[in-house]
Length: 398
Image (cartoon, rainbow, N blue to C red; front, side, top):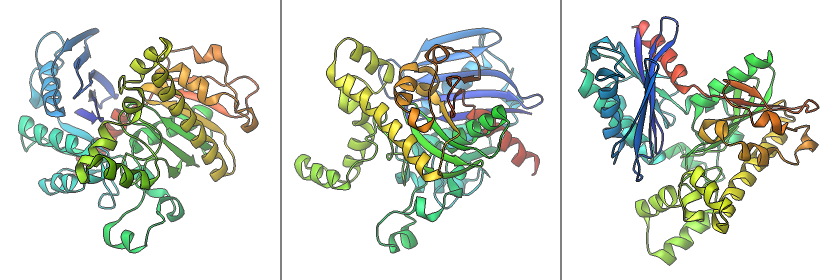
């Protein structure tokens, strides 16, 4: 069966068409800078690569372009859309309504839309993708949703509860849910297989336009940095990360904005963009910092510092540390971030080899120094394959 996997991020849309007979990727690509000037699509298939600048105001336009690239022109890999047997979608937030992957129904789409306030940047993009897929491929092609929150369901109450009145949890299910669970699940499994151990105390760092850090003990999530929504945790592209809640009410008074307008301010105008004043893209921020922009340097330093704090905190929570994994667009490609995060961590038994840190190209790279007790790995995440596997299992069981 050929499965099309759609993976919508806050400003990106990754896709792969996978032939599950051998798990062979027929084509893949990336729509970047959605909602940002300079948006484009890169499509790879048949040994070639095509990059086209296309305006993507929303994820809907990006999704339609993906279908076009797969079925027409030199990058076509299927003659007709009917060759695609199922579509798997990544969904960030399933709250407590979804504890496993599901075959899509209209009711499920409505529920994903209903809980969109818990992931305001993402869930509506997922809804757009789901509705576009149903319209393009028809009701006869099954769609499956794979939730990022599922992997984090193993957290104990002491990790997922907030210090607000308990009735807020009972009435409104206010708690920590986390995100990027599909990526954390994939890279933690890949790292355990690579190291030949299941009994690992591991911190996985998924770093991109949205970033989250997860504590994984013996293959199960025990804590994670994102919270009720993906706004919590470390500084991100346009998201503020952890802040004193009183900062919000104080800014509301000063700015005269409330509700969704304030949510947009924290989700879309903060983070690297808000601090640097340059861009939400880490590459742009680092370039500006190298050119002497002090605010860009500050933004970069803040992100590195916050990641380092989470690694130390989760080591304490688990009572030790065996492995740190870097993944995601920043985690896999930004050697400076990895170097800064791991600097002066010898007290934890963690030390990297800077020459190894410069390597690229392999699915897994061990950048640990020879005398490092803690393994430090760069693992290329493959959320798409995890989604495809879940999709195949559900569709085959029908």
